[in-house]
Length: 188
Image 1 (cartoon, one colour):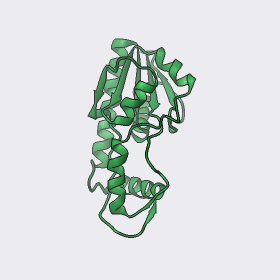
Image 2: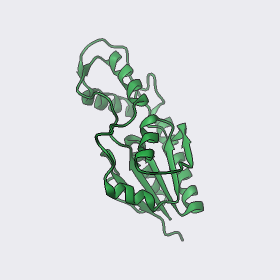
Image 3: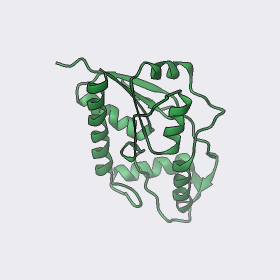
Image 4: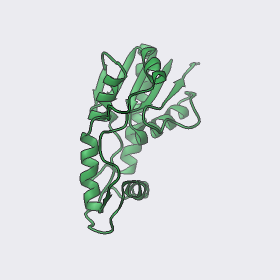
């Protein structure tokens, strides 16, 4: 059995901004509504890998669905909110104004430490990732090969769960846009 975890394409949204924490929350909502940048197409290796899969899964976020289209996936079998990116908390602070990367690091760390304002909790996110991994494994058992066109943080947690379930895959899960990792299960 095979599960391919593939991170979506580069979103079509400005990333060179300096924002307050309050503006960060608005930007995250815009990011979640954004499609993908057509100027950054998927590499041929990703397109070829997807062709070898018999079942496709994506989230209901635009960047995941549009990435599936760009990869040439003719039929997405499952497209559900369960497979969305792990929520990113945010606050209403007006100062300081920081880069998007700085806010992402700050709020992800705060989230891992228990801060979850305007988002699911760390515990809820981890539990959802575990359910996603279990569901992908069930789909692979039924369809043999599954591709999940997903999101960075969720993919990281899903890959850890797959490894804990006995799947073998890359030491480092896919992080860059269009990057993928192949997870195999031989069974017992």
